[in-house]
Length: 115
Length: 115
DNA sequence: TTGATACTGTAGCATTCGCTTAAGTGTTGG
DNA sequence: CCAACACTTAAGCGAATGCTACAGTATCAA
Image 1 (cartoon, rainbow over the protein chains, first blue to last red):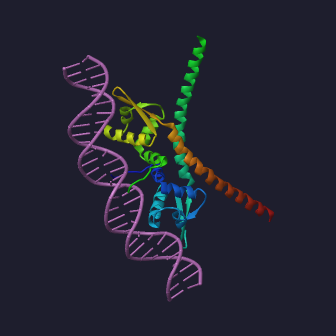
Image 2: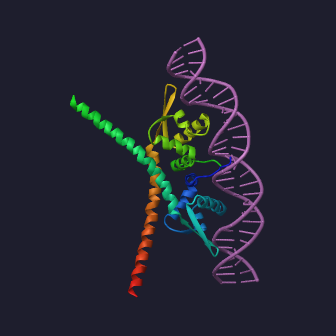
Image 3: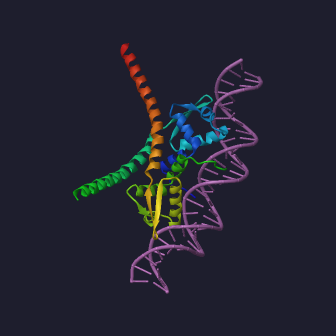
């Protein structure tokens, strides 16, 4: 199916849904790394890692630059933060519900005492 | 390829990568809803919505219970929190890097002043 | 210059995804 | 009872995904 416009969050969540790609992000959260450094712990060919890297770059989660024959990758904090913010925003509302539940329980308890 | 065990985060991120499913989660963050209530704003058949719901349930993001002919869905806060926590954990490390950069710049500026 | 290194790019393939259509099942209001 | 309602289930299809294998290209070290 043809995708008209993939919103940033679609791409970011999709990119983070693969354990290999999350492993790469975890590694990059400690600092920049080369492609083969990212590939070393992963049970797949270098080719596959490069393809995962492309997914991460297109999602805006990683940037990379080639110097000589080495491509150095770094985490794009801005996009990671946007993902975090989407969840935090939902949290704001479900916590509000929780507060209402708490208030209701407190109210019920108070009425219980009145009798 | 056969997947041996899909870790919870795989399923959660994968489930959240679809804009329709995120819309459903957004709706549920305000409180419980029936299947057709979730379907109403979405440009797809009820059948498709039910399939999306199944993905969300298998990811542990939503729970639902059927009473009479109505299935009522609620958000599973625990799983949402786990996703948030994974990002927060990465953040802990990239922010550490940022602190180091700040310290370095402060150091450089100090040396600049010394000359 | 030559061999190793560090990728890069493409073709192919099995699987999964997101959707629709179509044909159900179980509830409920009148 | 029976029609409307709220799903439920399965088949099928085109597109996307995650790999591997294989054949490059560019850089560096000796």
